[in-house]
Image (cartoon, rainbow, N blue to C red; front, side):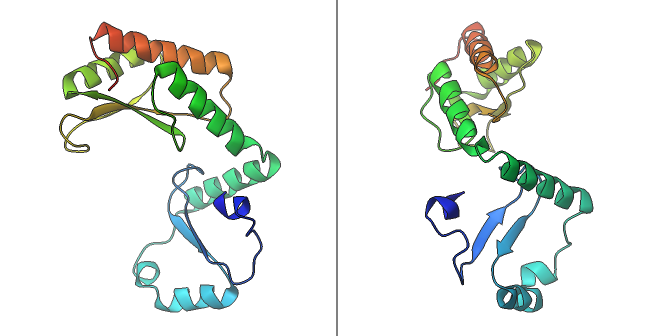
Length: 171
């Protein structure tokens, strides 16, 4: 991650916050730091004291994902490459993460395009007001590191065909 990219992995007195629900596909968040920091947060952090701890399945999922990342450290680079490839295939801006937003404008064509994708075996997210601002309804594609080029190209082709079918264009 960013800590390693900045050359700070293992640095003393470093405090790192993170989410387990995005790249690790689990739930919750974390604060990583010294044992003194950990003890202080356990005793004083209201968001920790008055919240329910992670369920065992979510904690196990996060741990399994971390083990995969340790065993396959190229996953983040493959994920970025795959996101760029799919965005280019769809004519979208280069994404900064694994989520590609294709803004189509009105809710009706966005919903219709999402349904057309589903009918072709490709599941995409569809976000419309009130989740997003009016006029910015969108399809969201989430990329994975384990997808091959042929699959990414197929997904891009399905999405573009669905958009054409409903008369929508990416803004």
